[in-house]
Image 1 (cartoon, protein in one colour):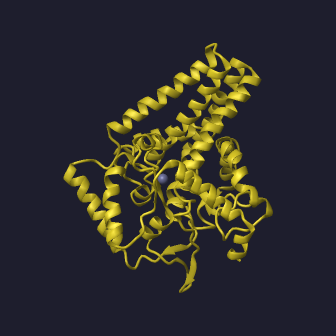
Image 2 (image 1 turned 90 degrees about the vertical axis):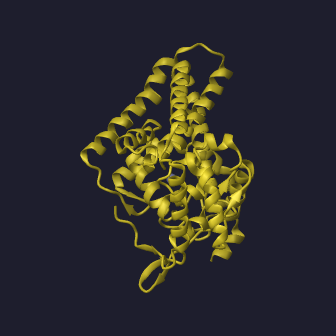
Image 3 (image 1 turned 180 degrees about the horizontal axis):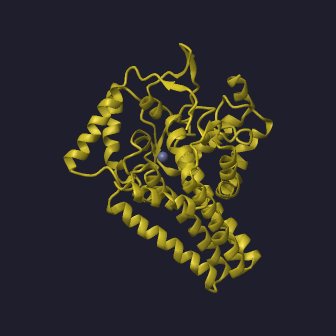
Length: 366
Ligand SMILES: [Zn+2]
């Protein structure tokens, strides 16, 4: 894929070199693989069967409406958790040492309605390299509907974006599945960056899994329960899934502790002033790292600093290596962003979106 020409100022890379050595030493001394282990496989064999059981029950069993709605919410939440725990690790190649298994488990993204081939380019390459760089990072490219940083154009409607972003996040999983993937597929680009060529296998996987999505998420449920109940269930499950996924991914980068970066022209090249690893620490924040429950459900995405520095290390190892990252960052005088609880991180995201949507900050940006 052809990335936009933006380079990092990696002249002094000693922080990351030291950190990598220490993290490698940790894995060697513990004789552990950097990929997933039984903890990840246990999650896989809990979350996937749970979703299949709930899906089957919703379509075949007679039950009170309140129970059906609760199960739709749980189904949406568990589907998001498959995204965080199984798909995300697999698409980064950290689920297993086997490339084939990573590829196969990455297809859980297609089972959630999206497409692993597009996701790997949007997320692994564009978002992970150019985190919070306006004009490149697709995760903050929701303009003109949402304004995610000061350098994006201001519109009067942004005044309300911290409110209307909730229903937008709630329909985000429907939008990927039925709209934005097709846009990317036909335009062959992601936020202005040309995508890799789809080979025949990827074209077939794209179309076959989209047809399967329509069959299993729409046609078959309508056949089993009728249009009305299907529509309610589909929107409730997607609202839970979309809100959970969008929020968890946004809490890592669009909060009060992180920064947004523009590339500047230096010696004829568009350059970011920091080394890549320092840029990751400036633009990324952890949250709720002391909660084992949050860590289990969000697949270590509450340890986003560790994830951004070591995306090829499975999330099950992040709590252990976070101690090293924190210490080495302190030794180099680099700020380690951490928001103590999930609720305070959510509040911080809403506050930040309100700030980006306020007119007074448009003037600061100008
Ligand atoms: Zn990632």
